[in-house]
Image (cartoon, rainbow over all chains, first blue to last red; front, top):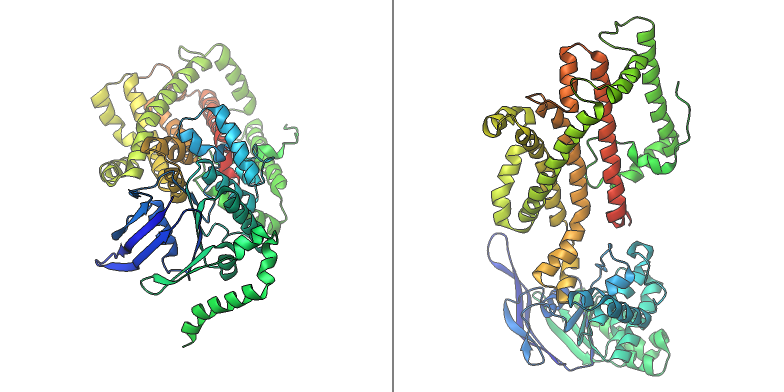
Length: 259
Length: 296
């Protein structure tokens, strides 16, 4: 499943008339199975881009295509995980995961089985009966990841999904996301403002910046894939290659500001 | 004499004003414990203070009447009122037992509640979901809301006559604004992310409403219902002033004409007890159906 973005521009109407351009001339060709990390400072339009690809926002101009279909609204081919878990507190963990199946009219029995399977994938097989308020922040994000996965989307759109977690949980969740990606082979778009997170997870790094936002950098990465293949996980962050890549990225962001 | 009975902590939330508590009152809880820490009174101490206050009033009432300082015509003693309550239940007053009067009143209030919910919830959703709905309904509700029911009662009687319909209508009109406003506020407060996630999972507009908007709004609707029951119950007495033959409000009014002060006081106590029962009842329903909304 390919994702293509053509000459995308997004602006928001100003209260006193006129428009502020948020993103300009964004072109992306994302082949199936890639883990694309979109990195940028806050306000660079990275979440806006994700919202357009998800179909929550209409672009001012340009188009988003999934395979041979233009995106005109949200759809189950693109699963979404947000920074706030946005779970439904009146449902238990299992019912939250099975929510997408309920919308499709799938029977309770099948929902239950598939939700339990998805919960197992994110390591919460024993938490299905728990109420949402009984889960920790990390567990909630696992539930929302399972909820997005159960609809079996081709593309997983993740908007700073680990942004609200504490540092340790965040590292754990990074490994989980990598593992899910490696196991399911889904195309992932992952928005973050963390340099380490971006370098560690992505198979491709896209840096957005400027006013209005444009693509400043678009390059392949291999740390995440290696970490999975060599089973070394987060320890890859201590390698010299990682440190060098981090420094380069750091300079891209902060050298400009110092001048 | 009141005997001190230990009351479980679960009963604490019931010690609140009968007109209900606005949404978001839970936010105030930490402050209350802070204040309690300053005065050195914990939640259970507060309960004892409340019970002692009630006992104090009873003792004062008893003392004032037993000493003969106030004539029984103006304030009958607690014993007389309790005895009268017993006779109201068995023999009744003005052609009806207490149960019959109470039944007539409850029927009016619940008929009105039904009508107010049926009209008010959709109206609230209309205000919360579209500028047209808001444009049309907001002025109507804001016009109705501040007017005391007694002010439009004569008009309702001219329109709907002096029968049962007029009484139910007045009570329903008093109940409508809190339900509409609470529903609209609840709908506007629905988390956009929850809606977007459901849309990404393929929800249709009907499914969005049924599976996300309605459950998200339910706690607000119940809060509105609680406030509406308070408003409706207080309007009841006014509505029963005109051409009623049954009802607690009518009973009090007739008793006043006969200077039967004990019946008046007994009736007031019954009205207070019923209002308290409403409050508890809605809270139980809230706990059963939207208990999740009280958890972090």
